[in-house]
Length: 285
Image (cartoon, rainbow, N blue to C red; front, side, top):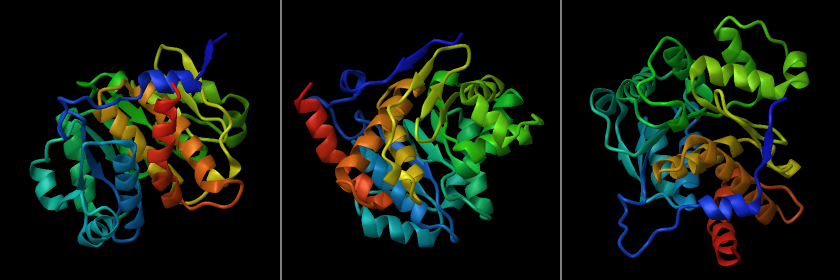
């Protein structure tokens, strides 16, 4: 039987990166983001906001002009790059978040391919899940599973496994969430964060981390984009993928609780609540 570790407040406090007097924006972690599209520009702003509000030293955004404008409107401290240039030469980053809101935009696909080719640490979400998984299943594994985090929800996990010719139904997944997350982790040689009311972190050949129950109000459009940004910031700060995913999911849920106060929330509310929740965590640890 697989051992399951419950991820608690003390685990987050012990792992959360805190800058020191000698740190600068580069040593705190530079996050590269390939997200959003002409159809879904909001995803770009949400990922970038999640990364910045979680403590990234700098965020570099790669994407189309409409999404760039939205990113800068919400987070003027972000640095934007055109995707055509990025496909030829990526800007420097300690970790990347790729795939959130990417749809029907060849230049974004090229930028995601460049991140894979560079063997950079990454969080792969939504539109990049199948691309990254196929590449790693085919042998593109210069970077280990402890630096690659896949973040599917249940439907995305099913579609990704189907793309790899695994015959899995929604009922199968419901019966064994851990087993099917591990199947993806083993196939892709990557760490998997399976989103849900109870989020799971599964590493290939390793243990399983289970997060506390998240607030139901968190089931809202764009919340996963914010989560990807938080995880990217932690990965860029040097945390292994499993710890980055577990800390990101825990903080994401607690920020949602703070922003909600028992009522509805929007994804950007969760990002905005992060600094105060991080401060409270660190001050009481």
